[in-house]
Amino acid sequence: MTRMQFQIACKHCHRTFAIEAESSKTVKCNCPYCGESMTVATPRGETTTAKVNAPNDTTPEIVSDSKQNRRIRNSHFLKYDGVGKKVTVVFVLFLLGIILLLSFLYVIFSAMSN
Image 1 (cartoon, rainbow, N blue to C red):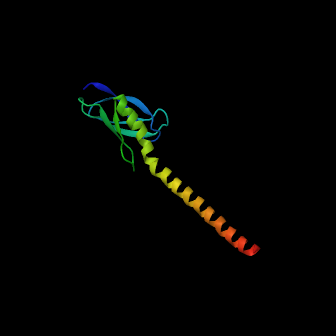
Image 2 (cartoon, rainbow, N blue to C red):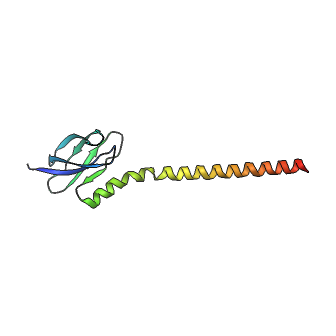
Image 3 (tube, helix red, strand yellow):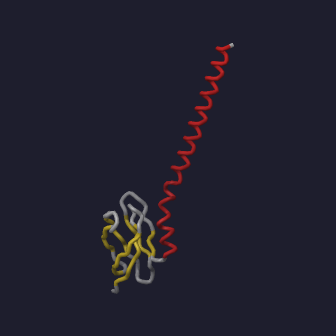
């Protein structure tokens, strides 16, 4: 079989790098940026898609097409989308709590001054 080059996105640091392997094989490799080890199952020769198998996590799709690589690199931001919403809700509730507390104190001190 001929060796092909595959673009891999690290599950840990989300950077892409290239590996060279035979198609339809499973290869163990380390990320050159963060050193995280991973197992890559390369596809058959007619496609250029591979899967990265990371424990306790979903496996991202790795492709050699540059447009697809941008989608893969940016897909890790989707995981944190809910965190931003939660922080915003907590901040708004905290702000409303402070406004209610200040209003309550204003009423009490206004009543005491009369």
